[in-house]
Amino acid sequence: MDNQTNSQQDVNKDEQITLRCSKCGKSITPAEAVQTPVGYRCMDCVRQQQRIFDTSKPLDYLWGFLIAAVISFLGSLLTSAIGFFTFLLAPAAGVAVAEVVRAVTKKRRGKKLFRIVAAGVILGGLPLILVSLVNFIAALSMGSFNLFGLLPLAYKVLYLFLAVPSAYYRLSGSRRL
Image (cartoon, rainbow, N blue to C red; front, side, top):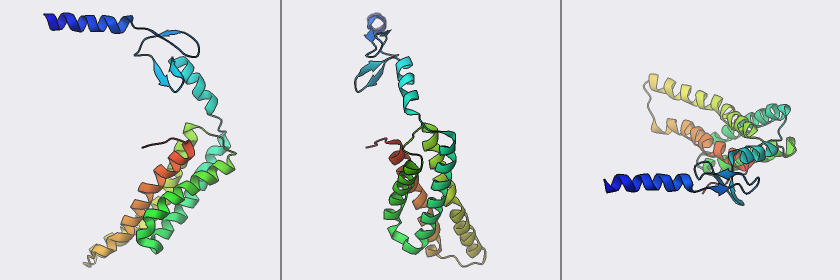
């Protein structure tokens, strides 16, 4: 009985606690509050602030996708030549994609743009993954299984695994620890 009474009191305390939005001053509950570097904000103010940062134009999506796909294709093509050093190439290629897109779009930004660029990196590297996969399957069907025959495919998959988040986070400005 005491546990039930205590939990009801805790619920009542949570409902009574109110915060104020640091921008508009509206009363908000802790469940509705969004913590920002300058204090708690209501969802309306957070949405309004996010709209300010979405400056991308429709043509930016096309350019971002094309640039990402071409650079990713070239980076994926290089993985066969450099092998193990794909660990270094892939993040650098992701950064190159982000910087070229940023320059072409004149530093305009938007969540949709970041996602389209990431999709461009994936689709740019995918054809060579499929070619490597077909080559490996063909070698298997001929009865010549060689573990080293799997390396070109592994390097191309590793390339995408490292290049996509590198491009996305570099372009979006997000920091992940």
